[in-house]
Figure 1 (cartoon, rainbow, N blue to C red):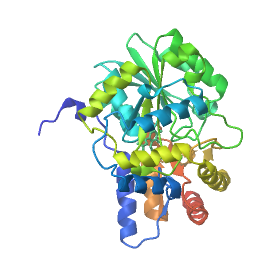
Figure 2: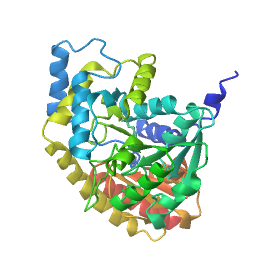
Figure 3: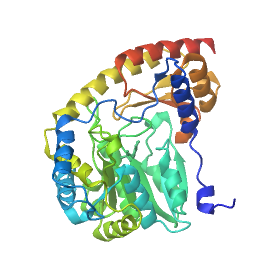
Figure 4: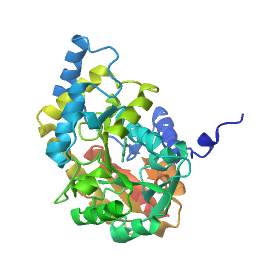
Length: 387
Ligand code: PLP
């Protein structure tokens, strides 16, 4: 069958292979330790669930405006003003089916065939594929552990061509757990403004920070930076709401109108009563977020110490999100071989770095309980020792 070139350029997910295998092993009764989850293992906090249940009972079960419930757009704008120093109003907000749809709609609204989109590697697995689906060209800029896997202003500048349209910035980062320092964000903003680029700042992990890491949105650096910034975020990670599918895009009114048009002809509004849960998430007490971050922090320490004690593995101490990005180059295996054998021989599920554009690394998620972390680390250490 002859398929559209658009879809032919999309790479099948290497993570799916490992995931399918781990699931099949579990179904067969095997005891698999999973470090592959990209989601908090907590339940959505009670007050958020209650708000969605009340919305159901109040009949919030019908079609709503494609751009989102006005009360949620307003609440998101207030959150961005108060938490992030970004002067948005409700009309600057599009409510989307998760952070994923917000980025996808943005690519469709902004990218013309051949436009270049600068993506630092390692990157979140879907960025390049979204650019492909929008008929754009991803321009991958490799970073290294020496800069904390963060793109420098010089690297960004060197990657810019007359075709560059957009730069994708993700801090805290999936898969590395690194957080850009405020002075690094300022330096990147200067390049973005000087070259008249757009930057999309994916801030979905902004609440999950450790030690003295600070989150600065690139749009808050200056009025000029704000004019060039689009923010993508969502409720999945901070409020353990992955299955709710609520996210948002914030940007200039024309852009938001364009993305609302796309959404109006594709998915329409996000599940109406789920949006009322999201309002409660923003307007309710934030202790639930702090409690989850405290638990993640404890697991981070255990996971980081455990990995640091394995001689052939190296990793940086994560500053945010819930991932550890581990350099496996000393083992001589590719990331797919390493993850495949680790699963097969030691029953530990991890994600190959190849999915994130770095084949000599693997990603471990510590969004799981401490017992699983202990057991998985022990198995991982034995596996590596035998290689
Ligand atoms: N951005 C990053 C960096 C992510 O890791 C994810 C999910 O894993 C998303 C966006 C999309 O999240 P969701 O669509 O679940 O809101």
